[in-house]
Length: 121
Image (cartoon, rainbow, N blue to C red; front, side, top):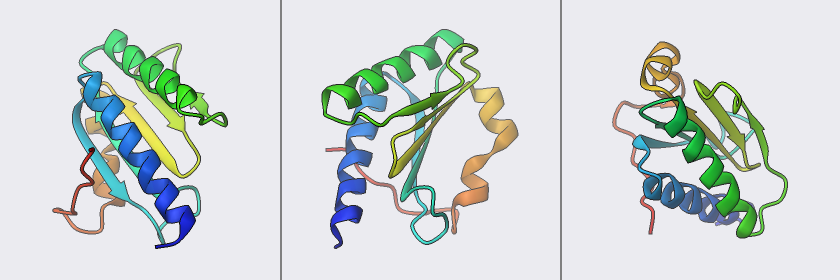
């Protein structure tokens, strides 16, 4: 496994743990290696409300910063319908459920309906 790929997997596991700890719902990691030059992994998750989406994103940003990830970019925090956290090799989309259903990123990016999921741990 290449070093960059290993780094993406380590980062993805940290993201998945943070999302799980924040009680994010329907967490779906999608391996997009070879499909996009933007990242290796995309993670899609839901929060129950604007406030929950914002809290999930805030915690994720804080935990990644504490873990040494400094080049984090974020969009959507003021409104919290859809927050995008760009952590380099991993893109994280945190949605309110109705917004997630409208955009349906999982369907767009998954190559097969039952793609294997990464396991945090």
